[in-house]
Amino acid sequence: MIALTVNGKRREMAAETDLAGFLQEMQIDPRTVAVAYNGEVVPRDRYPTIRLREGDALEIVRMVGGG
Image 1 (tube, rainbow, N blue to C red):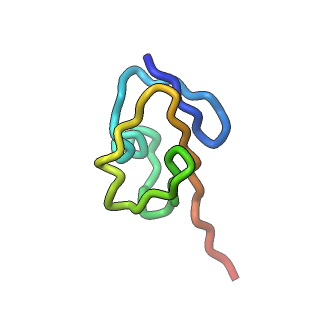
Image 2: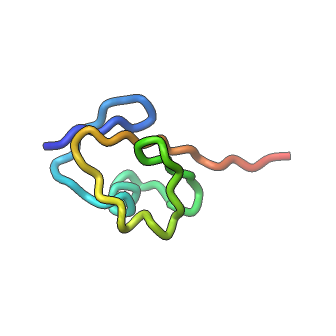
């Protein structure tokens, strides 16, 4: 079991995974969010290469349209 901080809240996961897999597990479309990993905004094409580990912090921001 590993613990992450996601949008300021503690979240536990059964095992390490990559960022793309985490978003899929959370049913979040990666095309509709921006993600900061440990304080650094990550380009979408790097999501599969980011390995989430114990103590990591994510900020996930959904894009909202309007007018």
